[in-house]
Figure 1 (cartoon, helix red, strand yellow):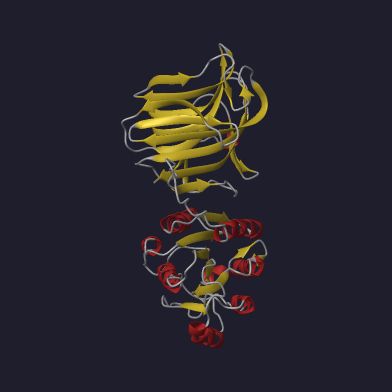
Figure 2: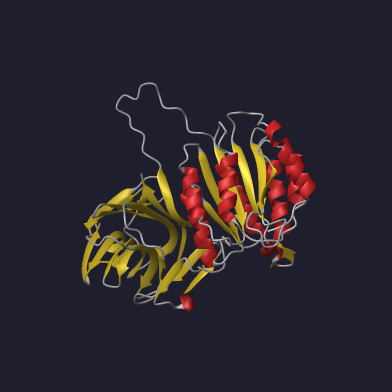
Length: 427
């Protein structure tokens, strides 16, 4: 993506062997910035590279002083050179030197993401504390490499390393590859379509890279076990204007589905319209969670799907029933078109502190979760995302399905707003 003054880069490279982090066990962060020609593209009336320089400068200056930082850039010196990758500020450089190198970038060439990830991993191999690579890119690999494999190798190299990726003004296909890099690098992916979203994305990145380390295990555990961390397969905060190519909408009705206020809004109507599904299927065990803000009135349900096809799926969520009157947890299984519902219709039953014996005419927040273990699928609901109530467990033999969301009503067309969809692979 752009050129950096060659003399300055060379000087820093020669000094690299003399620069060591001030805190050997403190976090290290290596920024990898896209310097390819496409970064001259504009978002609004500003070039993407100028937006990135401004936002990244602010982030670098706000990082705690004990965090060792560095900057790697690709595509910035030569137009058609897939070897155009440079460590313009080695990890441990002074912040002023890093900011100067950042501001000197002049985008020019290709996008050798694979080589950049490999070089970044080598640079951080000697770090003694936690290490993070933060990639900011507006496109995918253009040098025939495999950045996903490079990220996987880096994350499994035996060092405490995470690769976080910010996709800046990218298409669906580009998002898929960048998200893959973050996933294989055991990090997180963040999407940004403009300067405000880039600020928000890098703020979230900052939380990840300077997060306090987990406390050491106790000397004596005495029958206490620590749950294993889960691996994020897919997540979506809906902080953009369109769903994009990572989603498929079954029976779309564009008049009743939109991204609005960083949420996926679906207006409930009759039939199986606007079922929004993540394109990538899941084949093994998983935990899927989503937040939904919605009224629940008679003959309405808003929920999360595990979708195999139109005649085989699971649907979990609050449902407005008439008999008895109220909004009740329902976990539905459709197999070969045959319906089997698990319903909790017990008078006095609560989820958290919320009673269920009345309809909700105004929006309320629900958290929904489906967990797969083998052929068993357990549905849970919560009012705060912390304390969960089991709705029930279904058995499904099909091995592959997709996670999705939807809202349906045969009466009032209420709006359901979905947010914070996370799909994890329990370890």
